[in-house]
Image (tube, rainbow, N blue to C red):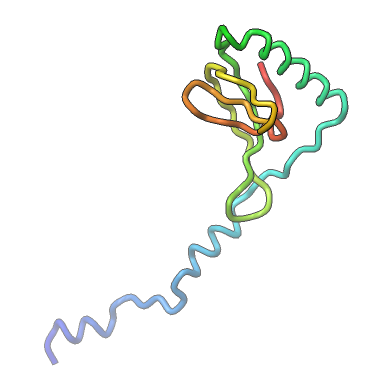
Length: 111
């Protein structure tokens, strides 16, 4: 038997392909969606109204929102800063000049 054939006998073998990826995914932590109370909802609505009044100036805002995870239950909190383009009532979204749109229901805080 040649040395090359003999070395192939001792090559690494992965009997459970995909197992390592499944373990990593199971160990990945996500945050749960927060449930704001009435006072927090009122304050967010008030701030959105203030920004809507100045929408023609395209004010710069920082929004922290909850982004659901595509794979498992929960998600992550994301903070984004940008210039506000419009607040869409029918779609219930905040749209920025770069095209990013955030659902109003997912917003945690606005500054």
